[in-house]
Image (cartoon, rainbow, N blue to C red):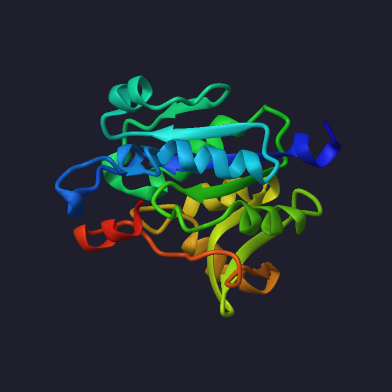
Length: 199
């Protein structure tokens, strides 16, 4: 394992309850015959992340039962209904003391984000002061790489469904943007209409 592989942990945020999807947890939505959470983990692994932490929330016991997530650290977020910010805090907290110096954050409901896009963002890592984001036609999107030097600041500002948005906006000048629009599609699975993106 190279130094970089050991330092960058994958972090899947998969706690959402799918309120606009009739209460179906996004982690368990089927894509290519398997739950979305498996797809997200596979994308991170294909991009070179050996260590993957997965934040669960809605129907977490069912997700654990139905999804095959060998080797992953599963993190329960009891406050998942408060929004993505609480899951980001839980995920970053789970990485403390593991030796990870950066978290590569992938959202479970963005299956159009390819392993190639994740690998591009990962390749821009330099040290624990890194802030890297995928961009789509120049517009910041996911995945996002958060160096460990930023974790406390991100956690402090992560409220509601904003995740790291407020922190990243405040540190716009420090972010390395990596264009991924040619290899990925950054749609979300939020509504019934979005389910057409799933295969």
